[in-house]
Length: 68
Image (cartoon, rainbow, N blue to C red; front, top):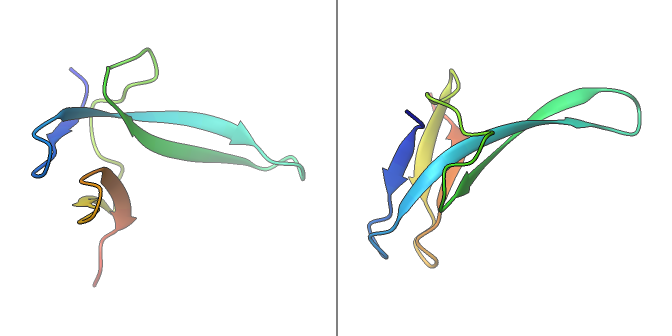
């Protein structure tokens, strides 16, 4: 089951996805994003050290590092 979060503003359900992106220098980074439909790149849990926050203006969920 894909990790999901409900927006407090729009009450819409968003699913967390991850994909690998290769940079020009050859390094690979993981990009995380939320989508309205769970696709094949949907992941089951939050990455370690990350938390979900919601943009107050748009109501869209975003990932950020946990503040210490």
